[in-house]
Length: 234
Image (tube, rainbow, N blue to C red; front, top):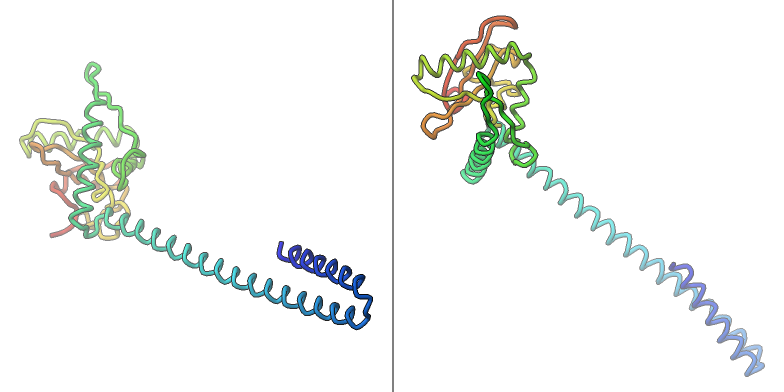
């Protein structure tokens, strides 16, 4: 584009030169005009080059600014995810997670229905929630249906016989708890690997608590190791 502009300018000057030359018929005038054209073209090319360099500098600065914004955005996202995975959190983020959990649990409760001795549950869409709420329950895919049934059976018996509570036990949806599967520090479940840890949650008069079940190895019986609001050692 800039080269075309230079060519147009040169062409315009050439026309001017021809008109001036035809009018004067003076060789010295022709030489003077040619010199003026050459100087003007050099100036035009220099100005275009400077403008292009300035544009490149501005584009480079804009690119660096966009990269910095992207890096800051990724850092903020990573910080939010770290906070959700069992690390210290601000009061604001804690409140936000609790709101998401409450909304998910309310929707989950609406999706339950009874069929004989079975309770059918239509789980909410995790994509509608932030902070990985609900998504962490995918840890259940580590276990087959028999293992899941035995884990929930052990959790239900503990809730009724030890805690003296009536109600249902659910797969845990709190990302601050399901972080135990990736956390090197497994807190109260120290010494157990992820394939031998199972989480449940239950409602204790409006206060949601968690059960941490463990087993010695695949095929062993599940037992409740801990109940409370965190897997971290206090």
